[in-house]
Length: 276
Image 1 (tube, rainbow, N blue to C red):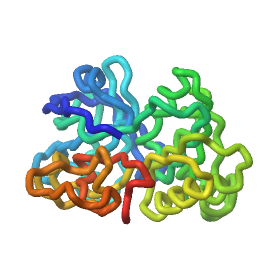
Image 2: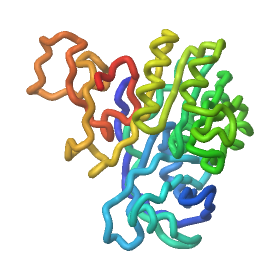
Image 3: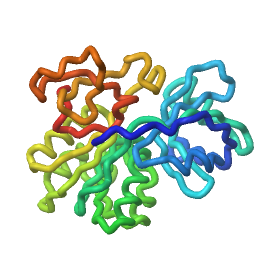
């Protein structure tokens, strides 16, 4: 998908609400009208923990409507713990929106595959696709039933929802990509976000269906703006998302790999162009 010129800036926001959806899974809503106005499905931000003593955390933009943007935080260390503990009325600074999001200009029968808190990066896409008349199915997987959070938001938006859990406590017992592979209703586009093993599997399922897939890659970003080159992935040289530099030779085969930054050229890539 083509690279989009960044409209990122620093936003001084205020916490509007906080809800705990599952143990260590928290959604925080912020008053951020300027951010909402420039957000596209698949964008993320770098959010600064309130104390300012820890590095910023990359979070996908979950909801963006009116004056409110929300973010889903999985608590996995002191930085995310500090963010998850914020209360209404507290200030939070963030930088964004960042990255290149999903290309939603194609696909009328779309399957969205989400693993765990990867669900937070695809709600905006689901709503936008349904708004333009596409049929959307959500394939949502987690370790156990309690971690299948906010599936009702997708159902309310008009998605058909299919679930899988590793332990069989709800829906299909096993991986969500297994459920996708079993469908007789082959989608014409797949969007996916979740852990790397799930994305690899989704890519293989898409290839077996001869269906194009866009993958939002999960990564720990140091800078979030492409300066440090700490989050690279090999991609076809001929991709629209391949970085362009004067020192990069253009006489190679289009499929020869070059390295793209997940935070800058991504985080969303066409699966068939990745060489991971």
